[in-house]
Length: 238
Image (tube, rainbow, N blue to C red):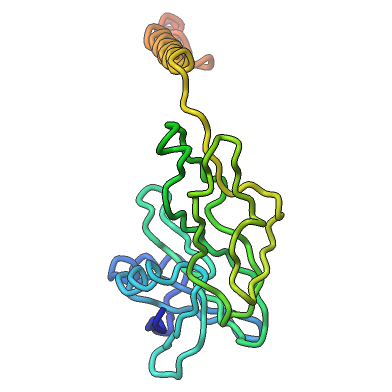
């Protein structure tokens, strides 16, 4: 992959004021690293997403802050909005090329499993990425996983079966399952599943119906209307 470049500006706005940055299409970010003073930054939202799509969180990026010389970073973490899913804050880790680091490399599943194509099974991806330790220069964008070896429902792909590039040490357990193919559901299982869903839906509707029929309870500390009227008359006569 060609060297990726990301431009950023030093950020003065902090705290709740960062909302104005996002409104202007800027993404708040922070740069940190071993022996590096933390620096708040602002990045154009569109440019960040373009770079992130290519780099993920395991590819080196040349970060240029204002007009300074570029430094090597990886995207350490992306905080997203809980409903829209859009990035709202980014952590950038400035790396030392001679110092190993921990990262997560995505798995790219390639090919078609015979157990899916010929036996009608369902491919189950148990892991989406592997945790690794490596020098920054040895990191790769993704690790391919060929699923054509899954010929039966008993076949499994373990972490130990992955082809890991030289210089990368996988931290996940070797016997952890990466992928497998499960048999298709029988007609009886599908019918039972549909019935379970229908029963759950009916139970929810029944509970909601009961709640709608329940009268609205008066606050326990509220004074009854009759007592209030009598009190008001007594006060008036007095």
